[in-house]
Amino acid sequence: MWRIWWDNYGGRTLGVAAGMLCGLIYLIVGFWDMLFCALLVGIGFAVGKQRDERRGPLFHWGRLTEWLSDRWPGGRS
Image (cartoon, rainbow, N blue to C red; front, side, top):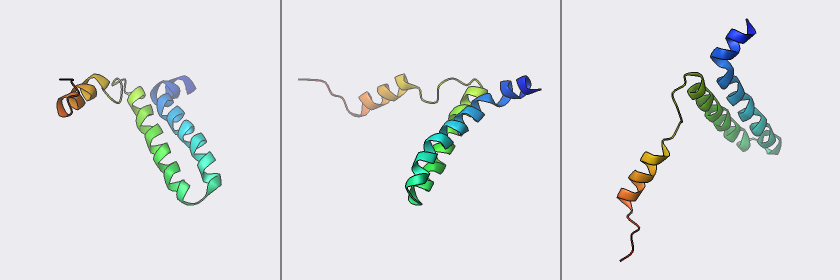
């Protein structure tokens, strides 16, 4: 039973756990950092869900760098 659960939800579980661990450090500091903790947990969940659904990387760095180079050509004259 645990193996099936881990295969289906393992990435999300690890993502949320990592977000909560990092967020706990910020929670100790104060209230406003709790909002940042929620952001970390959300990012962890999104990355874990990507892993569970085997959709590939969250960001396609090749497309991003191509888009940026089209917008800001840094060529020398």
